[in-house]
Image (cartoon, rainbow, N blue to C red; front, side, top):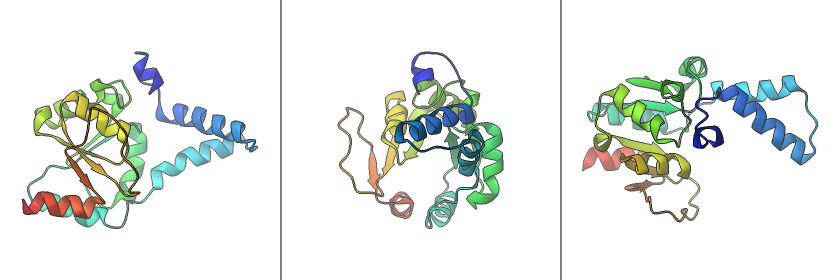
Length: 176
């Protein structure tokens, strides 16, 4: 995020992840090898979605929605993750396409252009405040998944929809 906000363009996700994990481990006094840090960063490629995600996304697809991922992960990481996600998407977009990490506006602009939609017709769904705030400030409609039921961040950019999980969001979008 700092590289993007300082207009330094795209830095590979693994490099940023490596810096972040190394920093946290060092600050926490936990010793680790560089190989262990690389292994930990690689685990993002095998993460499985929350239990309701696949069914919710299929419900949205059947309801006529196009599905797209916009990720700070690099293209090769997203390709490696595909078998673990369990659902196919119309578009899988890395911020490499824009040259900027989210929440820089150029990441969201590239996504809207690549999916061929006006920003106002996109619904950006996120469970991280920084992510939907970036999309909202770019002009996209937004939904915030509030799994942890924590107080929401004070910002001018409030989400259009708040749901406890993707199942609730899909149900509200397909029945309205």
